[in-house]
Length: 327
Image (cartoon, rainbow, N blue to C red; front, top):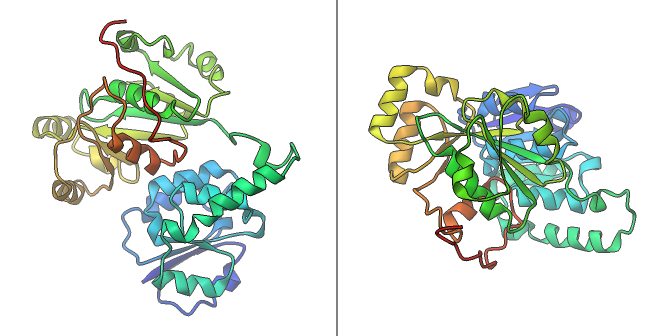
């Protein structure tokens, strides 16, 4: 059974001859769509892009790609959002099923696209950028918006500080990155002058300095600055002692995390164990991250994680600088 969420194109989508288990109409916040359907069983969701509030902001589409399984989503596009650049951005986020034609929806339900079916759109975008000399065009605007990602420990010492550092090192191969640590000074131990430690009082001034960056990573610790993040990664170390400790502290921990981006960090559990964890926690796991070597920045698992987050410009053939034990 399928889901239809429609707005501007409600009348057209209402003519589809498909089995529908749930149908919504109107404009919805991305977080509302994710919350309602992250743990809702359906075959395919036909999503009218105009039903997403502020859908012209590509960051809202990015949030959708992180929060839901995009292989189950068919995005029905608006005329204003069918440019080569926009389609290329969709492909970069792992969104392969999109169309402007009603008959294509039924085809995509039974024959979903893979990357090779839509790779052409990235090439088209490159050509459009090369041919377009209009500085006011979408293709020449550069980064649309600085993407702010928070990392927060759920279980005690789940590794947010080290993971923030490692993600920065990988991302800066292809992006302009800033990493911020809230209310602690642990970043000093990495001997990296580009890492910034701040507190809530100085945070507004600190983050303004990063507005020319593609990405800002924030190790949140116990800070309340979640409101400034476009998205937050909630880190869980899935060891017996850590899980039991957090559940005794707050038995509603995973109920409160429902619909949020959960990353199992420093994890040694198998894919089968992840499924069992999801069943018991009644929460979807975004990624299962094993223990990482913070002295090496050439790990395909980290790159897979970042690509899943939508960072497609990473060049895996770039050789990282040799790590020095003491600086």
